[in-house]
Length: 78
Image (cartoon, rainbow, N blue to C red):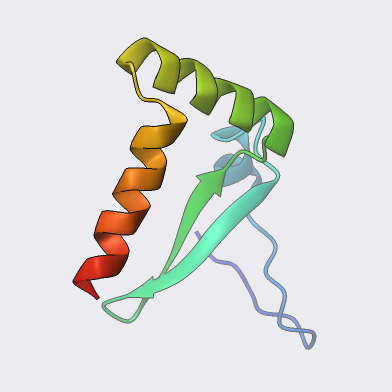
């Protein structure tokens, strides 16, 4: 499929490509081996993500003190 760059440096994705990602509005763009790579990204509100992280930490038994200790340890190494 062909996509043309406009005078404003924008690309329009072909319909067939967009259909494969119906719920995606954002893509992370990078260059690898002289190729443009688009990775779909879902934007999640920060408070929702933070809650999920806290739940996972609780399941793993990780405490605030563990985080503080890990940061201190990492800073000593640099």
